[in-house]
Amino acid sequence: MKKIEAIIKPFKLDEVRDALYGMGIGGMTVSEVEGFGRQNGRVEIYSGGEYRTELLPKVKLEIVLADALVEPVLQAILSAARTGKIGDGKVFVYAIREAIRIRTEEKGVGAL
Image (cartoon, rainbow, N blue to C red):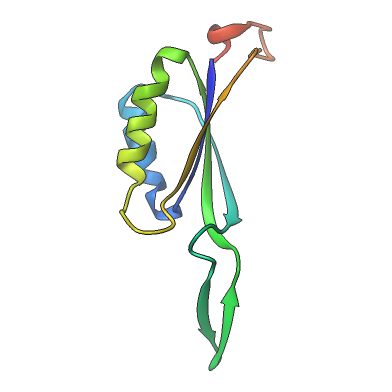
């Protein structure tokens, strides 16, 4: 099993979610997060004054799935989340040792 963690632009969430649902991926965790990378924040104007926003809003998706699904899911996320502009985000893949469904205590891929 693997865990895919993707940090994407918030306005791309629906597109990524639809692509994953279309593949039969029915579960994920979505969190609103803030961060910055090479874009280094942005400058905004409020009440005539200029200020710098260091942390930008992002969305973090967490998906745990069977090894066989990793590559197709990665390609779906990359295709749906890409704008071609700086700040599109990052995707990380982690190995998962065990998964347990709390309600039934089912273990492994069946718990997903």
